[in-house]
Image (cartoon, rainbow, N blue to C red):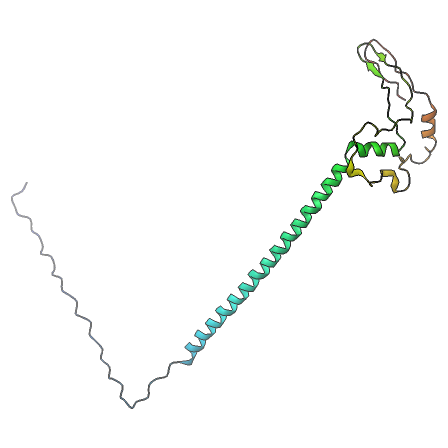
Length: 196
C-alpha cells in the first residue's frame, strides 16, 4: 500500500431552486362585465347526456326483446317435448306383441300350434309336420292390451300391401305357392336346403 493520501475532489454543493414566483393579476373591477362561459361546452355536455340516455333506452329494449324470444323458445321446447313423449308412447304401443299379432292376423297369417324341430347333429325331424290352420287366433294366448282399443290394423287403411313383383313376374307368386316344398337333402354333415 502506498503512504500517500488519496486526493478526493469535494462534492458540489446543492442549491435549492428558487421558489416559483406567483403571477399576480389584477382583480376585476366591480363595474366590468364578466366573461360568459362558452355555449359549445354546454351543448356538448347536454348532447352527451342525451346520447347516454338514448343508448340506455335502446339497450333495455333489446334486453326485453331477448327475454320475450327466450320465453317463446322455452314454450316451443316444452311443446316439442310433449309431442316427443306422445310419439314415443305411440311407438311403444305399435311395437307391442299384441299389435303385431293383430296385424299378422289381418294379413292372413295363422299361428302354428304344432311346431316341428330339426336336430342338427343327425338331421332328424322331431314332431309331426302339419300345415297351420286358421282355426286359432294368434292373439288368443296374449294378455290383452288396453292401449290398443280402437287402433285399426295396418291393412284397415285401404288396399292390401303386397310386394312389387316387377314386370313379367305376375304369375311367379302363384307358381311358388303351388309347388310342394322340397325336402332338405341329408348328407353326412349339416342338412342344406335346395335352392334354385
